[in-house]
Image 1 (cartoon, rainbow, N blue to C red):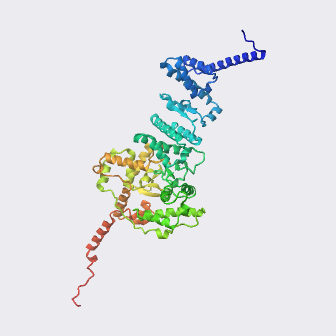
Image 2 (cartoon, rainbow, N blue to C red):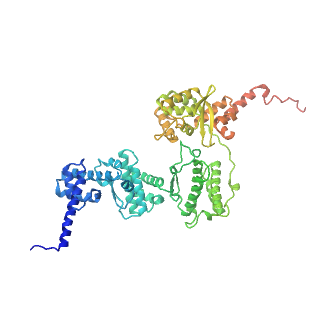
Image 3 (cartoon, one colour):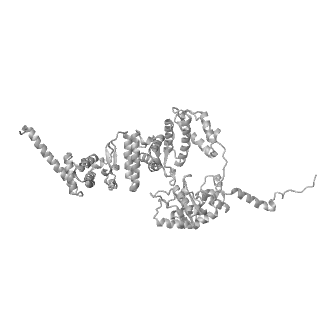
Length: 586
């Protein structure tokens, strides 16, 4: 029996059928525009999307892809699934590229959402290209719809993009993605709310969740990588983060040592939250208000942090540093005094902790400093260590210097022939070398003194450096010796490479351990032997006080003894020359 519909309902059905046909035609046109995909693959996608009543390729996502994969199992032979899926991906990627050509699409591109992110469908198709040949597609799925704190998920999202946009080779990218996935799973399972506030015990727990030393070595770097990525990317500086990455701050060039920069400050070691916050506030003041060098600030920071770590054990969790008394401070300094540190280091700790308490007093946290520095500071006695490099070692290195890389050869000559600090050599600029009159000179910025020094240099080194600068097109403001990014050559890299090549070339039979500062002692000692005054030597080395310069002149006791012998060998200077013989009883 035929079904009879009212007129209005029949018109709606007819309209609906027409609408469906219109939508099908529109879908077919969109898919057929993807000419880079073969017709058979396009037709299969058309059939599937029509059944699912999906009318725009922009609506395709990873979940629909998973449904399409199941659909293919009934439609095509198993050996063909991969190619049909690849066709599906090509159509989706075509849609993404079209969307990114619009302003609305670009604005929407990289925003976090509680959805699944499939990396081949990343809005930035230039980034997605690196996953083109990945065979394990499941590893490219990042599920941000999981039930977990949103702050943490947003942070993982930031880290993920930091990894895939880093530009490193695919092997490193894959290793970092695998490590991040393990870290993300751990954070979800353990309800981590904020990566920047991870405690040491939580990091240890993550380490213990990894099976064996090999997996730990391949994975644990992701914790620091993640915290750094988040700290650097936030709109505002998170002063309450447990680790600060100083790359985020734009310090005056006079406050940093480009050859050995301070990379981070970690507050996580202080478990008392109140003390940690006070230390963070103090360091915020130190970094932002004072003009101290960052390396000096870091030294003070470590001393204060060590004291607060000691308080974590000594005091109840409910108390903080504002409640310490003279007895507690006496116990702490007594423990430091018997720890074996030198008097000068001990005094530095006393002053660092005093500065911290002075800050707390100014801020109204305490009424008085709970110790008197006058009773604690110790008298210091300069200790001298002979560090000069023997003539034999110097000559052997020079004879084998042509086996060293070009940069190391030239950097070594600055130590051996001029006596610069290694960090000064690493930070030399292209305009450092010049001629004044008939002499060659070098201009060196001294981090400690916050000023330039200008000293004469051997003409041979000047000529070698001018050739090197021309060869590599080094401009006046460029670093002469550069790292991979064009910054100053790292002091640690220089030292490591010198040790490596000294060992490789069997310097002193392979027993020689390169120490850059020993060459400053050597130059100072040679100059002093040549009767250069202490004052002249002080200015040449760039010291503030003569007492420091004396510490660089080696074998001083031997020199004094030798001078005494020479003096008293002369008859007029004999100890007995002024004694007259007298008769007994005279």
